[in-house]
Image 1 (cartoon, rainbow, N blue to C red):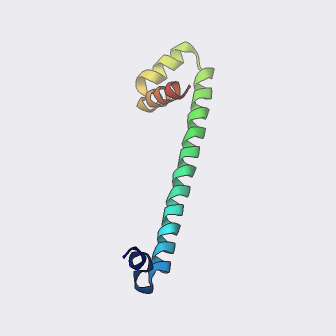
Image 2: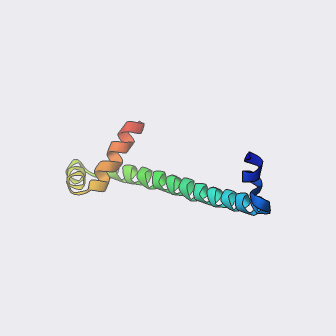
Image 3: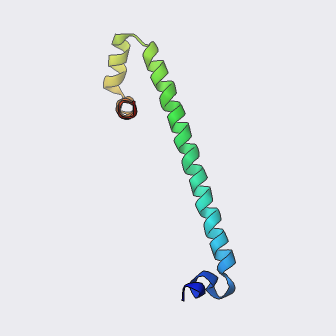
Length: 77
């Protein structure tokens, strides 16, 4: 029964190969996006460190994204 499912009446090679290519493509997009996000978060944190205390508080009060980045970076560190 399992072998019939894997073979799929002769179409198994096409189906499983297509499934594998689609899964691989999704994984590549996921990891590239994750890497890019980490890079932008790091750039933001380094830029935030160059600001004065008044500028930092102003940015953190007005920017939801900045608050989320700092929240996730403090969990990691």
